[in-house]
Amino acid sequence: MAEGEEIDWDSLTFSLTQTDYMYVANCELGEPWRPGQMLPYGNLEIDPAAGVLNYGQGIFEGMKAHRTVQNNVVLFRPDENARRFQKGAARLGMPPVPESMFIDAVEQVVAANSRFIPPSGRGALYVRPVLWGTGPIMGVAPAPSYTFCVFVTPVGPYFKGGLTSIELLISDEHHRAAPGGSGGVKAIGNYAPGMMPSKNAKKQGYAEVIYLDAVEHNNIEEVGAANFFCVKDNHIYTPELTGTILPGITRDSIIQLARHRGYEVTETKVSAEFAMQADEAFCCGTAAVISPIGSITHGDQKKVYMDGDVAPVTRELYNALTGVQTELAQDPFSWLHKVELNLPINMV
Ligand code: PLP
Ligand code: COI
Image (cartoon, rainbow, N blue to C red; front, side):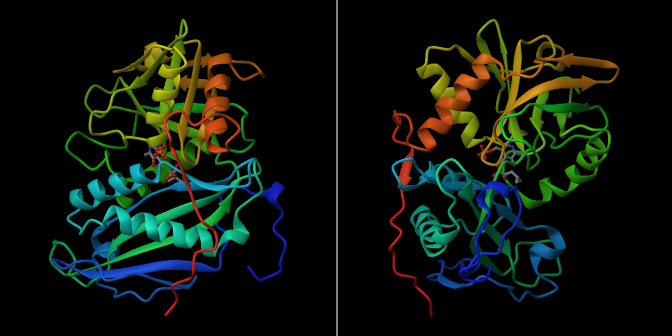
């Protein structure tokens, strides 16, 4: 996006706007990471035999920088993203990025692209760290070299309409992850298989698919790229982490905030049947924030949770979470990480 060009903050969607700078670092397998550098945002050169292109050896993260009501720029629990990135790297046989390097890279990219951070309450700067096996490899084995890259884009709501309810469809045909697989980490290969089911659901008027577990075909796992919650008799339930579900940082934050506010929260198996008898349901994630679920359809059954208005516990938790993220409310767990915007840009 050309310098001086105005961004229409109110028309932001969850899509890519090319920004000014990105961060890139490299490492050889078995050696430490070399210091990274800031580069103008643009194409990277890659070997056609790269591990990531042929065998999907790659992971990504998703986090947001918010401009708060006090005009600070903050990241939300970036240390958690750094740790999940390390676990994902280990699962896919890649050299983990040290936590301090991860956070330094994210801070540099946010600071260098500060003109793209939306005003408070009108969106966020979405941060996308990626780690790829970029060296060439023919056998199915870890690539000889790796690239860690961080880029950003200003975003608005993930689901159309912000805090309006979404209609979801339970899939009996497709699963996202199986026990022992890679569902518990943000492996890039977890996402393409969900595109066709998601597209088909959208054609039928649903916002996304709900996946059931791949063993009993009975318990709710996730909503596309977001975690699931439901509320019954003021008690909050969410699927337990079994290794097939991504341990969402928003999920964990909601559990902690809800307990802090006096709610009982149970992490357990949540059957589709139970969820369809609940009073409220919502899904959550960095991109999705908290998205109220208006209805769930499963075969010929449809459960409608709300007509028009956002249900009370969902709204309370939305206000609690976004309140912390924008400094409208106290930050009882010290989750906010302030970014200094005048960092020097380390360009070569
Ligand atoms: N589940 C999946 C499959 C995801 O890709 C995401 C997004 O990162 C989430 C859940 C939510 O995780 P988080 O709250 O850490 O963004
Ligand atoms: C996120 O919530 O950050 C995600 O990664 C969701 C999606 C865009 C993959």
